[in-house]
Length: 97
Length: 150
Image (cartoon, rainbow over all chains, first blue to last red):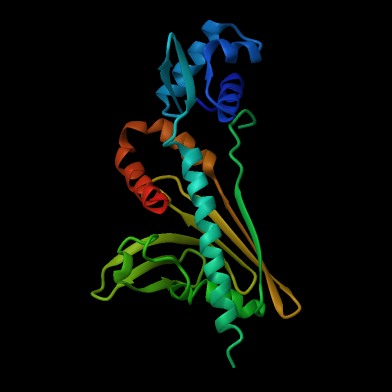
């Protein structure tokens, strides 16, 4: 299984990064059938990259909130804080006689 | 790998008002003076030292007052005072690591620092491959994350 290697699955993943969508909405934006979209979603979901929840009668799919995207966002924020602290330390110590 | 997912590297640039040699030294061997240990270390406030083995292949680790060691990263490139590349196992030690490259460039008496944290695709692929074994590692990381949000 190669959840991230397939170009259509990558498109599905990219669309979901912009916000939760239903199978129908995804199919409307992609040149593949609804059953094909469902199949791709199942692979992404099995890989832990996508989750879904029911909203009324339809299922909404979204990026798995505990996935790599969240980890990366956490690291992005971490470096802002760490580099600000580094800058303050360097400018204090670096200027000391 | 041309079909592989691309997850953008984290990139940061800052300018520091000190000379390049000092910037590199403080970033590395004097990291204890700025690294947010309370939230981003294994032993928290008990850490007394951050050790950089200053050569390619060297290790970066934390040491507590009573001698407990915690691995942080491996040094892939050690080129003072201009470049540093680290392999950072962001989840668990025996998993794919991300790479952190930091460049220091003199600009008169100031230093431009460019940081790139990359390799998220490998983490994603590996997470997919070993998904069932990851719960502990992710709980750990997300624990940090939630604490920061809290």
